[in-house]
Length: 376
Image (cartoon, rainbow, N blue to C red):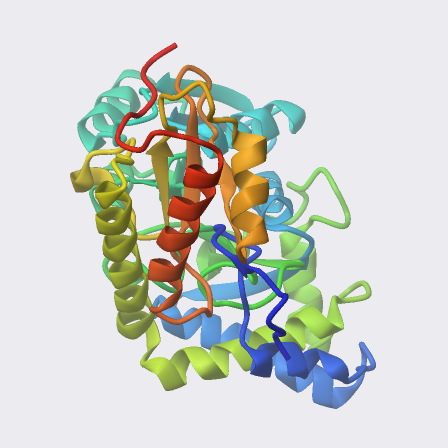
């Protein structure tokens, strides 16, 4: 299904999918058909299995990108008089704060630099200082830089204070261990086109059942009311509104491959090897990572741009693309960077090929390797 002209997506989603996943989308499905509804039910069960949440949580799928599901989770689980604390160390944390503003939920933020992890001790102090905070919204892997935040430590602090935890696990779910039996959370949000290696178009929220049962009437939106979606699916096995049928079936097929590969340990292990091969290969070109190794997630890596007058990201992007790879621009404001994803169905040989393509691209631009950009 993939042709030689198809570039490999070195992005954090959408990403390169397998031929088998693509082939699953060649059939059309009736959205109320019993066979399709069985696929939806199986998919929800398999997603819960990944976090060992079958006994305590519900998986509620939703049409749209992952951000749709983040907004739906906040709008459904946080009461209209709730108060959300958002610790911020990157662009996707900032997006959650922006969502809270749109939803008129009371908001507090606590800022870090983009190279820092969020600290559980800070969350502990902030929750002690302000008992009006009802929820903490945390990004597990901040895709803007690739920093991995200490989820379990923060979850234990939030639980000890009796507050709710909403986790954006968009870039970590399925590859980095999250166990609902030991890491308490009210909701975890992810999407089809990330580490599960499906195609984009569907998000899902893994919500604690006892919390979800109390959420009637919270939502600002009919379409994004997770409580209503859950109740309707439980009653009918169907989606309330037209589902992304091809996306659902592709994700079901991708999940079959996920378990065949060996589940989370195998998927996460493959990404970790990709990440290390990428960092090592880029270091040989003199291209250094933005983050310290201790806080780097094996999902996407931010690199300092070459400190050379001949370097221009748009030209660099096109030169790398011409050689068969799609990369991402940086998300930082003061430092010029670019990002390369380590996830997707391209095999472990894909990273050495990407490093070679980057070397060729920079050489063709007349960029002197070995020098990286500094703070503007």
